[in-house]
Picture 1 (cartoon, helix red, strand yellow):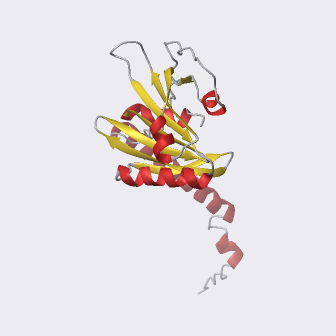
Picture 2: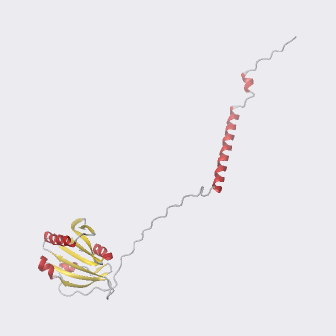
Picture 3: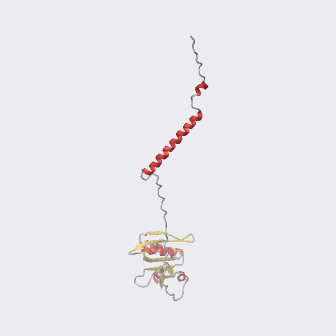
Length: 215
């Protein structure tokens, strides 16, 4: 009786039945592509079905700052009479919408507080009883120390200031200012070197008036 002895299969023959490495790579690529298509499909479906999904956040609305133009006067300044000094010549006729409507001597500051000269200037934004007015008292002293002594005493007597700060000219501090409430309006005191000024008028206009006043 003859027996067939089968030769053992070589590793090369056995490998012949297994997929090659290239096949594995193709399968892996095919699987990866299929998975990617599935993810995209889910994302697309979610975008249509899920409320708000894939809707971009609204861009922030930019802040726009609009600066109103400075008010302009509607009245004509009063004519000046008499001899003008260096101080009265420096007093403006127009400040924003307010125009100078009269300059008068202020003897009290000269007699009682030793100012070399002092004046009361009335400014108004219209003619008649409806006009808003600002009354300015301005005096000049022989030196800074005398002007500062007078200003400091007036500010101390005025009570608690709502706002204070430095007065500067070309970046140099030449004095201070102090704003006080006064009934329906306000009062502001400031010193610029040897000149001291007091202004009284509407509370909503006075700080802007002060900021534009050239002294």
